Image 1 (cartoon, rainbow, N blue to C red):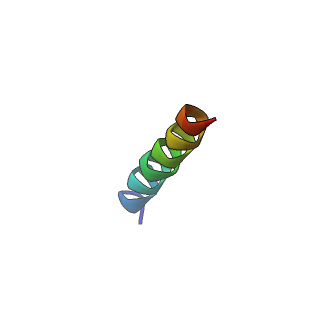
Image 2: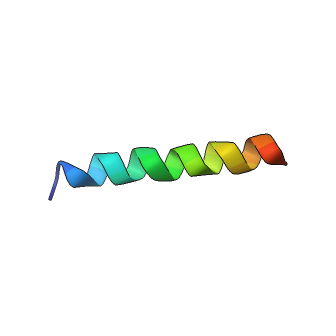
Length: 23
């Protein structure tokens, strides 16, 4: 469970970066 948490965070951050790049 703890190992999955960082991966999820990284994925979320990546999506955020993509949104920021589009805007």
